[in-house]
Length: 380
Ligand code: VJV
Ligand code: CA
Ligand code: ZN
Image (cartoon, rainbow, N blue to C red; front, side):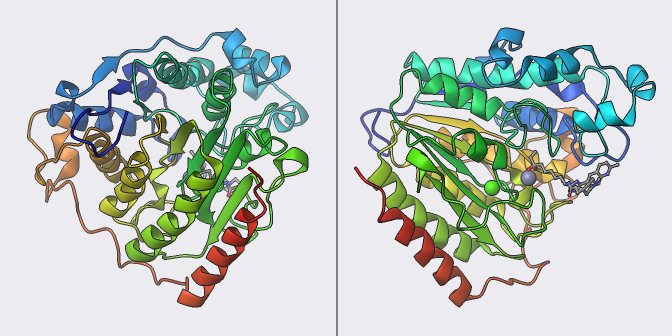
């Protein structure tokens, strides 16, 4: 399809299983699956279902999860319960990285297979050509590893999706605008030149997950096919958008991906409970709009985001951007969850200005230079 041409609008599909929003990580845990219900309710309230194809995907099967994950680990996820956890040795729990970040909660396996199933459903619509853009806001869980969960992520739906896209696509580009480094995805494709992974994230060597310095660039055949853009606290709309476009334009032009997977973690917004960036919803959405403008088939996923009312505002707005529709600033009063958006009921509350921008012009210029230097070594 040709983006931004009047001849043909993209076919967009939306993949959502409402069951996913019913799981609880435990009291006070920052990851709140009900943010997905808030998102879906906004999408319904704005009648975005009139624009796109809606699917209620089935869960991923065990076989599908084993395309990336180890059988030991998936067996563990399938059988573990909060009650059994109490009787297990600390060593066993540590072996599977169970703790405060990744607790064992009721239905942990069902939850994981539901969000992974939605990503797999979405990629199948892309592969069959039924969709040009396929959306799963419940996916994008970029930290999960082959053998263990990490950072609130139990199975890595992104890696599973890319493995399947590689069956038909020669080159897949992964773009991650979550606040955190996309370590699980980077690691899975660190040795290949068929997947270019690009992550923008907060980095100081300490901040979770600790990886993502500009000199992690890939190994072997994969050398230079991992790109990292480490940022400091408080980055604002203009510097982020400018840097994003300056980096992504030459990367896409040079790598020529036949398919793009974009992870749209909402914790890079201002006012996020775990966040430290200063982005407004429009700026985050501009990054999605920009990637869409290349007219390459896209799998669009969620990720982090810990202030649920803003997560849902963002993902509803991005759904509208992907459908080329403009939404009213005032959220329609159609469903009971409307109360979450008061007192302003605005789709675009001002989120910036709370945190000092620690990214100097000079710093951003040097990061851009390093990344563009790396690009010169790409051979095609
Ligand atoms: O920083 C960490 C690891 C610790 C050990 C565990 N404690 C709880 C926190 C510090 C070193 N983990 C990060 C994980 C962030 C995951 C981000 C996931 C995504 O957005 O990229 C994709 C979905 C972290 N930051 C904040 C917390 N954990 C945190 C966890 C809690 C919590 C408060 C903060 C877990 C339980 C409870 N409160 C009750
Ligand atoms: Ca990121
Ligand atoms: Zn995150």
